[in-house]
Length: 260
Image 1 (tube, rainbow, N blue to C red):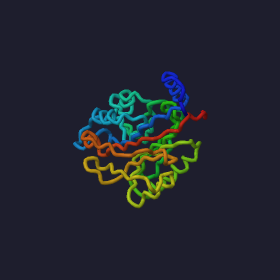
Image 2 (tube, one colour):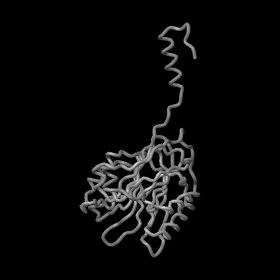
Image 3 (cartoon, rainbow, N blue to C red):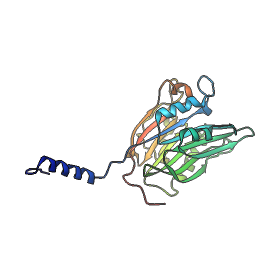
Image 4 (cartoon, one colour):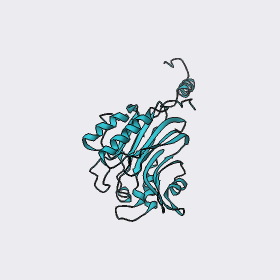
């Protein structure tokens, strides 16, 4: 482009017009997964405010929480986080005992387009689930699978098969898989069945004060939308729970899908 023979003001006006005609690059989406251990920290104190301060510092657009507990109607961590974070919630209750409920939470700074709970219970082990939701963040549509897998390899193997089946249900152009998957070492190859690349970075998140294991995972499908992945390892995060949060920056699709 040449502005020869035009006045400086005319050239500036033409530059502004050309820039305005170019589509804006969509902002990156910050996603985090965090096992909050019922808000019981490494000092064995229950302190939801401490966990909330960690989340506020992350400032996520999409947040998956595991081990969220409702001790009573007056002390319901699901509802407390909903009110304090001011984000749209999806609750995935895995079980309710006489005194409390327990499960996963997904929170979105945007809207929930669709949602369902995927049952990952493998008897006789502890009940588990995944939240499967289509969300809209700043006009960008994506699917989120937020899961908490079991403690035994055989149990996890069957749960991964269930997640593989779930991913074939109403696929989206962009999907995030995230959560406390309890997978480490050679077993991580199993995650390829649910879209993880063999090159997925292993970020150590457990135990929080001095992480040794990469139990928490997050990736995008397609994988090239994952821009960065790191543990949030501030002093506060090292004490608020037994896991560190895992935080990713996601490059969204350029336009919102028209599918309802």
